[in-house]
Image 1 (cartoon, one colour):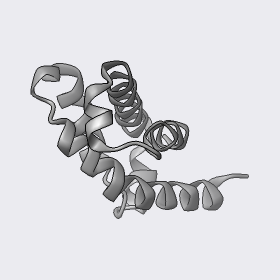
Image 2 (cartoon, rainbow, N blue to C red; image 1 turned 180 degrees about the vertical axis):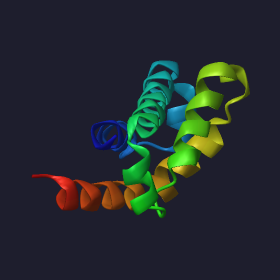
Image 3 (cartoon, rainbow, N blue to C red; image 1 turned 180 degrees about the horizontal axis):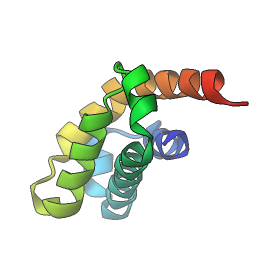
Length: 103
């Protein structure tokens, strides 16, 4: 999940929403990374998910489902908002989980 977040942030750091929206290759790559985040969230054991209720596990899975199955209804403006409002806090939470659970 963290690798996909880092990749999304690197790909979108120095561009505008308009540039993001106009670059089909880029926004498809970003959507793919969100799908990876959702798949990875689904693979996290329930016991870990229960210990970290602040992580939006369900939202990540639901977002993956929308991006995979309802691709033509994806709002790039909402994707952009998600990138800039929610990925940093998610990365922070995930880093803490790894720190606490790595042997």
